[in-house]
Amino acid sequence: MINYSMEKQNKYHLIKEFLEIVNAIQRRFQSEDDEEKQWMIQNSPNPIVADLMKEMTVLMLHVLDAIGKLEPVNGITISKQFGISKGSVSKITRKLIDKQIIIIEYLPDNKKEILFRTTSLGKEIFCLHQALHHQIDLGANRFLQRYTEDEMQFLVSALREVLHSSWIHTETIGESTASSQQNAPTNIEPDTGKDLRFLTVTEEMNEINVMLNKLDSCNLKKAKAILNDVFFSVYED
Image: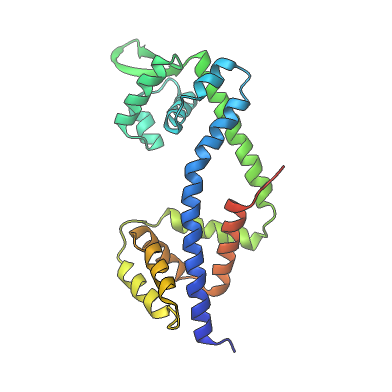
C-alpha cells in the first residue's frame, strides 16, 4: 500500500517543480520571437526583405498575416478576427504603409471605408512568414510523434483546460492556497517554504495550482515530462 503522507509529499514537490518549469517556459516564449525573426532573415532570398525584417515586430507580422489572408480587408475585421485592438491595428497599418509593405484602397461606392492590401514586397514577407509557420508545424509534428496516443490525449486535454480557464479571475484561489498549505510536508526547510511562496505570489501561479491539484502523482509526472520534452529538449532534424 502506498504511504499516503509520502504521496502528498511527492505531489507537493512535483507541483513546485512544475511551477518552476512554467516560469521558465514564459521566459523562453519571450526569447523565441528573436529566433523566428532570425530564421526569416536568413531564409529570405531578397536582401530588401531581409533588411526590413530587422525592423518588423511580432505584432506587425501578425497584422500583415491577417491582411495577406483576407485582403482586401478593413481594420475592424482584422481586429475582430485576430484579437488585435483597433488602436494597434491603426498604428501598425500606418507603419506598414510607410514601409511600402501594404497599400490603401477604397470601395467604388464607399470612399470612407479604408481597405488594406499587400504590395509585392508585402506578399514576399507574408509568404516568408507562412514558410516559417510551415517549418514550425513540420518540426512540431515530427517531435510529437514520439508520444503515445494516451500521452497525446492527456496533453491535448490539459492544454484545452488551460485554454478555457481564467488565469486571473478564479473563485478557487483561496481553496488552492489552503490546499497547498495542507498538503505541504511538515518537515520542509524554511528556505524551501520561501521559494514556494515566491512562486505562488501571483494569481497566475495560484490558478496553476488549482489545476495541478486535480492531478494525481502519475499524471503530474507525465505533465512534467511532456513540458520538459516539448520546451527544453534540444531537437535536431
